[in-house]
Image 1 (cartoon, rainbow, N blue to C red):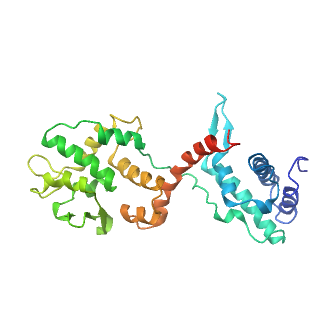
Image 2: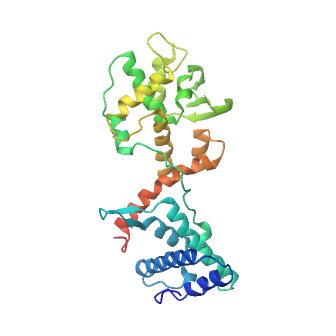
Image 3: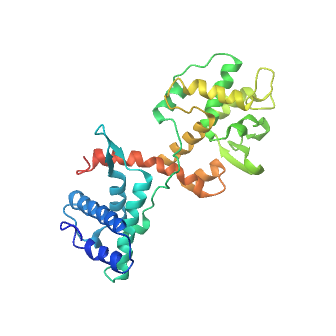
Length: 301
C-alpha cells in the first residue's frame, strides 16, 4: 500500500493510522507524502540525518519556513499557504505523538513549533527603508499645515497610536518630564507610550494649543484629515495598496517585532487586551526567515 521509498520509520506510523485510527486513505497518503518530504529535507540539509530522535524544533521550523508550494501554470513556485504549513506540521506532530505512545521516544520536538493561523490576513506594513526615506528625506511645507502633517506621520509611526487616539490627543496628555504620552484607547483603557526627545521637540510648537495635532485655528484634526495626510505621504515612498493610519500602526508593531522587541511589551504599547492579537506581527517574520534560509543555509537553494 505504501510507497517503497518511504523512510522506514514512517511506515509503522501509517499502518497505525490505517489499522488503529481508521483514517481515510486520503489522510494517510497526505501524511505519508508530507513526512517523506520532511525526512528527505533533513537528509539533504543536515548531513544525512535520518533518526527521528535527533530532530529538533528548529529543524522542523526551518523546513516549514523554507519549503515551497506547488508550481503554477507559468512555472513560478507559489509560497506554501498557512493552511499547507499547518497541515504539514500536523503530520509531524501526529507522527511524534505516535512514537511517544509506542515507547519509541520520550519527547516530541514538534511541541515548540507553532503554525500560522489559516485564513488570517497578515498586517500590511511599510518597509523600514521606505519609512526611513519618508522620515528623513521627504520635505514637508514650511507652514503650520506642513508642520502638522510631519507631526502626524512621526507620531503614528513612533507610537503606534490609532487614528482616533491621535485626533483626540491633548497637550495635557504629554508628560515631557517622564518622556511619555498618556493615551486613552478602546474602552477608555489608558496606556503609557514612551517618546523620544526628538518627538518632544516636534510637539513643542503645539504647546500653546489644546490638541497636539490641530489646524491653524487650533481645532483638532478630523479622522478624515489624518487619513488624507497619511495617504498623501505614503504614496511618495511605497506602492502598497492600502495607505492608511492603521498601516502605520502595523508598521510600528512589525518593525518592533522584527527587531526583537518583547511581544508583551509590543502588546502594552498597542493597547491590545490579549497577546493573541499581537502575535500576528511575528508572522511577518516568515518571509525574512524564508529569505535568510535561502541565502545562508548550505542546502537552502
